[in-house]
Amino acid sequence: MAGRLKAPTGRYGGRSAEERQAERRDRFLDAALGLFGGVPGYRATTVSALCEAAGLSTRQFYEEFRTLEDVLAALHLQVNDWAEEAVRTAVAGAEGFPLAERATAIFRAYAANVTADPRRIRITFVEVIGISARLEEQRLSRRTRWVDLLCAEATAAAARGEADPRDYRLAATAFIGSVNGLLHDWNAGWVKATLDEVVDELVRQLVGILRPVGHSPAG
Image 1 (cartoon, helix red, strand yellow):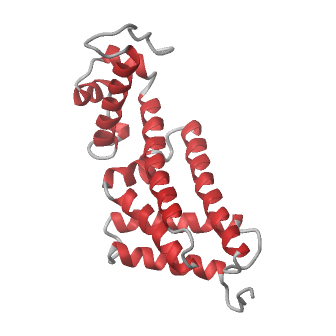
Image 2 (tube, one colour; image 1 turned 60 degrees about the vertical axis):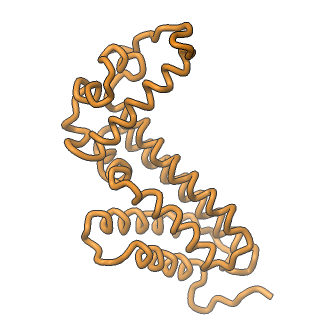
Image 3 (cartoon, one colour; image 1 turned 135 degrees about the horizontal axis):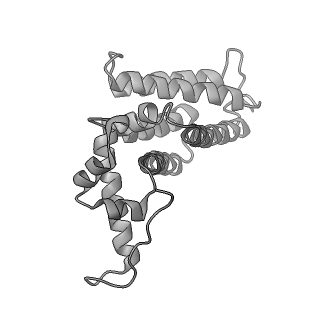
């Protein structure tokens, strides 16, 4: 298909065309979470299978998306948005906390969100890998958002005298890779630890980056 089909307009059943379209899109994404994030996975899913799981027609699919890759891209963004919302809520709630307590609250919120549904981890860390240059660019772009958030927290901690004042972008990029890898391996059963133990280890690593040996608190 060269492009999406034009969706019907006007009200029907008391709902606007925009409301019906949003509902259909949500149903496709919910179905994709089950198929892409579970069995059979993105690569083995067909448009027909997705439509059947969503309880919608192929015509309705092409009114919303051009390809299955479009669905995967939208789902990847949605899963990341859920996690980012949880983290930003934790950031606001940890205002004024000491560094280690603040980091614990933030990473506990992130870990709880992404591990609440194993399908989310598969979408984020497995299914989007190696699909296309477009999805790789999107994946790296979203990772950059996490790096930016971590750098902002590090800069704020340095301003409070709780961390060394320096450019943390390289360290943050490396640390995000550690977070993603550890949570993926924990979810896959390759790491024998509780989620709290995983979070505690990540906090220790982060505090070690922000407060290396020889760090002297300001004031």
